Length: 79
Image 1 (cartoon, rainbow, N blue to C red):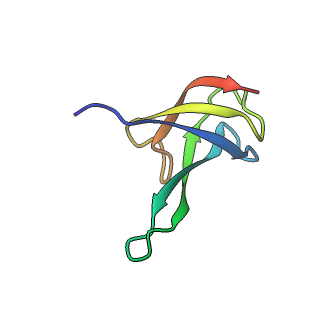
Image 2: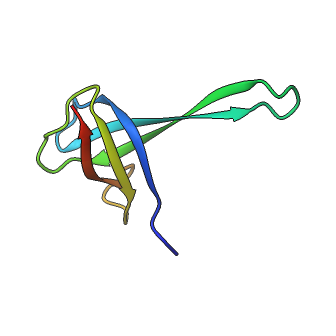
């Protein structure tokens, strides 16, 4: 099974070696068809503490690193 990859924006870097990344994607409402934005929050491993709030990053799913961390940073796309 291939690993999942996604792109998101860092919204918090207050933890040591961990950042919170939000992925926003538009989806249609099941009944009414209106486009609604859905967001997913991911706890991401940042071993060098290099990410700042607002950075655009590419992340990849990995083995569980802690209770909530299951993603790691592949690439820092925009600062």
